[in-house]
Structure formats: C-alpha cells, structure tokens
Image 1 (cartoon, rainbow, N blue to C red):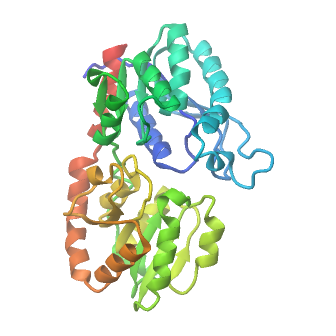
Image 2 (tube, helix red, strand yellow):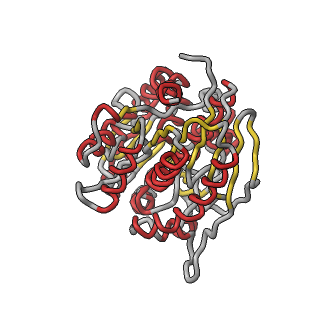
Image 3 (cartoon, rainbow, N blue to C red):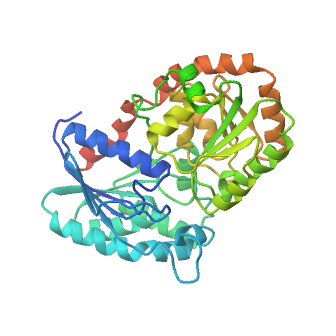
Amino acid sequence: MPDKAQGVLIISPFFSPNVGGVETHLDDLCAVLAERGCPAVVATYQPLMTQVSAPSYECRGSVEIYRLRWPSRLPGMSQPAYYQLLTRPALAFLYLFPGLFVHSLRLLWRFRRQVEVIHAHGIVAGTIAAILSWFFRKKMVLSTHTYYGLARGAPMARVLRLVAHACGQVLCLSRQSRQELLSIGVPAEQVQVYTYWVDQHTFRPLDRVALRAELGWTEAFVVFFAGRLIEGKGVRVLLEASKCLRDVPQLLIVLAGDGPLEDVVKTAAGSNLIFLGRAGRQDLCRYYNAADLLVVPSLHQEGFGRIILEALSCGLPVVASRRGAIPEALDSTVGWFTEPTAQEIERIIRLLASDPQNVTAKRAQCRAYAERRFGRSNAAPILESYWSLA
C-alpha cells in the first residue's frame, strides 16, 4: 500500500458524540487516518439525536473535525427531528441537506488545495459530495451503512443511483447492500464490500468475576441490550418478552441507550429489568464483559449490527434476529438466531437461562472469532480506495 498521504474530506450528518454504528465507525476511521498521518477534514453536525454537547472544532492528530450547530428539534416536535422523520425519507433528506451542504462547501473551499478525495457517508452526504466533486474536480468515494429497502425507480433509488454514478468507488457494508445497489442499476465493477472493524484494545475480555461483583450481577443470568431506543431496534418486543420472563429465577434484562422510547423503557423497569441510560465505550465494554448474552431483536433490516462486533470482541455471545446483514456478522459458533417476536425472544432467553453450559461454550469462541473477522486490517479497502482514486 502506498505511503503517500492523501487529503480527505469526510462528510457525514452523524458523528460522535452522537451514538450509533456509523458514528463509532467514523471514530475508528479517523483513528486509522491519524495513526497514518493522513490529513483529513470532517464536515458534520453537532449531535442531532442525543442531548450532549460537543466542541465545534476538534483536532485528533492529522484529523480536524468541524461540527455545525443545526436545530435538532423542530417546532411542535417533542423528540429530535430526525427520529420523527425516519419514516419519511424525503423530508429527512430535506432536513439534513441544506446546512451540511453549505458547511461542506465552506470547508472544501478553505482546504481545496489539500483535499484530493471526498468520502461521503450515506445518501445525503453522497448527494452533497457529488455536487462538490463535480464543481471542484475532486475524486469521490461513497460509503453506505445500511440496507435502504429501495425499489428500482423509487425517487430515493434514483438519487442513490445518480450519486453512485458520480463516484469513483462505492463501499457497501454487506453483500445484501451490494445486491441492492446492483438492483437499482449501479455497475457491479464500481461496488465493493467492506466490513467494520473494532478497536480490540478497547473492546476486550476483562475480569468478568470482578465486574459482575461490582455491578451486583454475581448471581444473575444477565441479558444485555444496547442501542438506540427506537421501534426498529425491537425495544418494545424485548420489553414485552421481559414481562413473560419474570418467573425465571435470577434473570436480569439490562438495557443501555437513548432515544424516543426512553420513557417507555423507564416505565417498564422493575424487578427483572434495569435501564442504564446512555453508555460510552468504556462502560459498554464493562457491561459486555459482565453479561451472559447480548440480545439484538431488530425488526428492521440492519446494515451489519456493529454492536455485535463489540460484544463478540469482549467474549459475549449473541442472540439476534435474522434481519438484514446480521447473518453476515454472526454465525452459530458464537450465537443464535431468532425471530424478533416477544414469544420467540422469551422462548430462547428462557431456554438459554436454563442451559448456562451452552452459553459458556459459545463464549469461549467469541474473542477468536472477532479477532479473525473484525480487526483493523478491515480498514484496508477504504484506504486503498483513496489511493487508487487520488
């Protein structure tokens, strides 16, 4: 791989300390770029989905991050605007596009001599990058982080196809996502599959016995959920299953995250269900190590399920719904698949709580599985796309 450092403009509406798989991936990508001394500028918003503050400017070695303040709540909305618009893609696009376009234009003008490649994340950022790459004559890479569920000919499918045609390279997070792009007319030679990686120093096995004692989980069989508290993550399904599991001795269901369903989760908390609120990386690592199972009851088509990679890296086996690209992240050596219904989630948790040896056998496989599949070498296709284009 060439040693030449290419200047990169990264465009994404979502970035840490906003919480999510894309945000964590971008943190990891920035860490790799900084480690290599590759100059990069990030154009993003202040957190739109969580009530935390972030500096408008941040420097991480050779990576500079510029966050634009943008209204996270619109008049008449009780929840962050993006959550309210999730089911209306066109309105979500119109909400995210204007500020990020102006912000990215301003930064690219300022750093036009240094930037050689624009790396866009998602359809909104991709549309912005397509315009800017044409005007400034810069090369462009598009990363997708989800399965969009687009029908050929649908308005957003046409937008995505046009954006993809403007790119030198499209990087898809899963084989399923690649197939979707091919189905809407993106040329196969332009689309490459990549895989998230995990900071396996941060997410690693710790002293499980000490952590369980510290958290008060010593005698419990702990089922852990982490993620955005939204309908698509199956939060209500898990809460419904928890009601039916109250008769299981020493069973504890623990949830971490934030989102529109936070009040629903708080109301449901009780003798067998604990809500921890928003958790950072270090806390998540402790919870993964102390729990017995991670449950991922997603209803929607997951792009990959990054939370699975983190849990496996800590030695935690996974129960997950067979949705989207989750089967590409997980197999039967380190977890179990289930349908995301309250009845099926209840059934498998009840079964595994009564068979701890089965869970222990899977746990023994998790770390090695994660090291084989989710190491930092997975960043290579992204870096190579920069060098091949610039």
